[in-house]
Image (cartoon, rainbow, N blue to C red):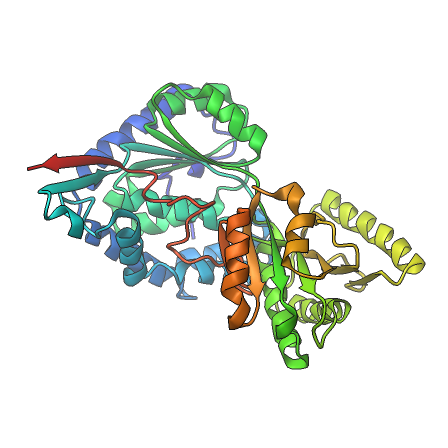
Length: 453
């Protein structure tokens, strides 16, 4: 399947981008947004998005086939990992879920179409209309496709023209998404631009920022600081920096059967997108006192990761990533030989997966690519104490606990600063209405007009 040259990302590798091309693309996006998107009904956009999602969930869809065919080489993810991740994302884009997102964040599904009162506004004769940015720019990271695709969905719901700047080599899936939208509704597709270049091209980025009304960016804290420094005054900026995640397993759920079930769910969290996202666990804290000990849980997790590798191979990684895993394994092999407080399980003849158990509860960052720690703790207060170094940087905690304790544990986690708590097994699969880093993704983008009658 040959894609037509609708987007800058479709240009051949030898093509040269310059500030004039970027400026012209932004002007075209603003014009197309005014002509084709600004006056379109929100329900019409929802219908297009849900139709697009249905297509992507069809194994015979040409864009999905192309993603599975070209994706492993372009992204490093195996076809099975890509398939699972894309299914998880597009299965969320239903009419009901998109309407629920608008209702939750804007108070009414039609708030972007017309002045609408909320229940409390009827008495005061106040109504409000939400308006998205005329030109919304996304600066995306290169590791996972789902956040970029979600940013594009939110921009469409906000009735915004969008310029999606991908990291070098990371444009395949956003590009296919844009083409699939163009195939359903060309006028909507014309309100999107996708391009990719290596970071640091200030000539291109300054031309882009000069035209933007709002910029979202995902990346390291250093990258976000640099972007902020170059934005013109008056351009709104929403930054999503580096975050980490972990799991907590209460002792009551660690029966023989329960421990195996939770280990399988935990393996799904480790394998999803090869543990490379901010929602992926670096480690699981396992509370002492269960039928299955923390060390036994680590062994069960190793068994489940071995099964997962057969069904959903990790795929290729860079030599540097493989070397980091090998080095970390060697260190823990020495520790395990010297003390029963450390154990390690690993894939045979490959770096595909690794489980390290430690009695030492101090928070430890993983080297990722399915390298996971299991730590023994007495309780949640100890967990929060030893994780103090990453306080304020924790995105998600996967929780396995009985109903009698779950709310109390979730409350403690929330008050400590965790912005998302979910069941283990769902860490990399947030609902559409998830508040990214504790902020509403759609409501952040809009500005409000209040009408007092």
